[in-house]
Length: 536
Image 1: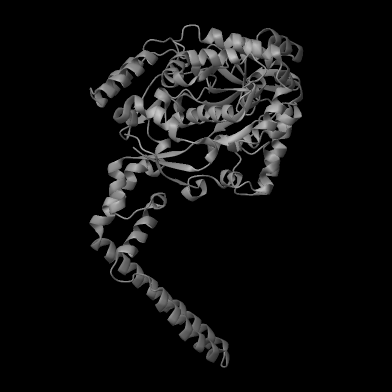
Image 2 (image 1 turned 135 degrees about the horizontal axis):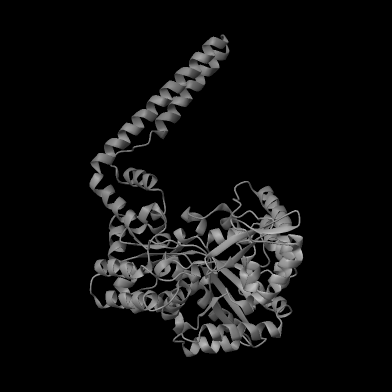
């Protein structure tokens, strides 16, 4: 049975999040120019008012019709149908998260992203009951990096889909996934939860025509009871809403100019802030069947890289007007596209995602589109009751679990050792002795002063060497204890990384089945802004 969260710790204390994200969560004043409003429940009031002024009724109508079309052949819950309908009303808003079309959801945090959106929508409804709030999962159907999404991890091994890929991944047919299904089925056993997982995989990937439809099916099955709306924005009608912004990109190259300046300003705030994305002069791809390549402009002529396709300015503007679906925003423009077609208040993402959103606020301002509130998704470490019991016996706290393994072992050896391992007192005593020698040396000549300094360094080094020898000896003596700590930490941090970035949801689902998602939803609080540790 899932129980209450056993602990929460600050994201900074995990040592797994960048200084940029930690400074944001600490509301460092220097970062204020790079975001709109900090994610507190009260700040959504002003965000609602700002967004209300920018959303046209026509856009809502087009959005709802597009979603209804996309859900035509989907087993849709009443909650989701109701949320789609609600989007036509001027008092309805979206809370959005996005993710790639990873095979079988990819890493475990896929669940945490969507749960963050669902739970925030609920919190906002409670605070602002006159409005409607719809959780949205934006499928990254136009991505083309197949190598990032063609596998998931199970029991420490990759379950991989090998095939040739070109163009937008959402359009990929599902050839070869029957082999993946068979391989996966063979390793997960025949328990009732295993059979549910097999059914999910089979229905998603062996009974649909492309990766976008398969991913929608899977996400819908997991979250339809909570009214989740899943959007495929690779849609002609939706892209028509973006035509004025795409034209500005082609003609004025606004985003390149303003984002480049923002990148400089971010680096001036701190050289620890890593620039996630660098803008192109044109941040659009040309997309047709089997093709997704960058558009470039040279001396007034527009070209599609790695092809023979070229246009004049008037020709490409005409093409954009007639076939907007052929123009695909890259990572710089995709957030803008999202905010143009959705009545969105907040984007929920991981640390890397939010880092590149900080680069984009000036681009939104340049084209007069409200910048959303940015919220770091829930992060979770799941441990079993048995693991918790073992950690208690070993006297390892939740905070200590996040330490580097070598540091953790050293700390525990020092803690358990019957003798004192560090030579701090001896070093201090030695330094005091040499203080008198230094005073004496100053009264003679410089060569003697140098000799005293050299002797001090030599003796301190000798003590440090003995200290290391003693630590090594104690590690051997306490090997059984430290091995148990190492084994537990390796289980909870597979590959020396966060569990949520490595494990697939199927490993947890195999144990807890349909209870998993409802319990995560009941326990996680998106606006708490802390790393959660849950005991299963």
